[in-house]
Length: 136
Image (cartoon, rainbow, N blue to C red):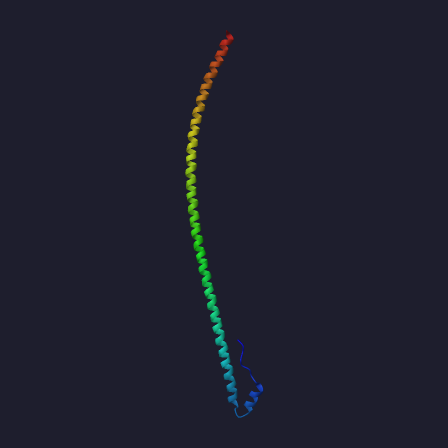
């Protein structure tokens, strides 16, 4: 955007004093106005195209962010579903192990109590035998 207008002050002064007079001043003002209009139009065009470029880039970035957010939401939903399913499965397995452990505990306690009663009965007999042998 280079300015193409140049003002020759000496020439303008001679034209003002000469036969052209105020018409020369009007011509110079018209040239300046045309040049400013041209610069303004160029500036608006460049600014407008730059603004459109920036808006297009913004929309593109916004769309990428929305897509990324959508993917993230989808992944989080899937992760939560998998975590819930895994927790349910773990609860089922732990429940079955608990039932099995309780069953084994009751079997163990039943077997242990039988051994205790057999052991007491056996120990009483042996003590009686030893006392009976000792008295003979």
